[in-house]
Length: 17
Image (cartoon, rainbow, N blue to C red):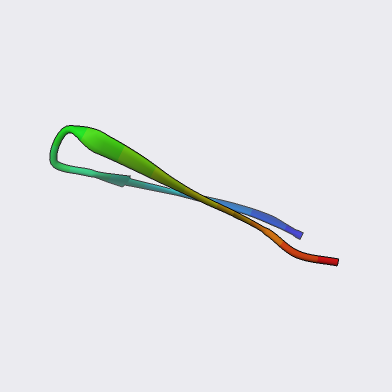
């Protein structure tokens, strides 16, 4: 599962199986 969260001036990427 790939989750990408966009915030104020940054990207948070979480990758989990």
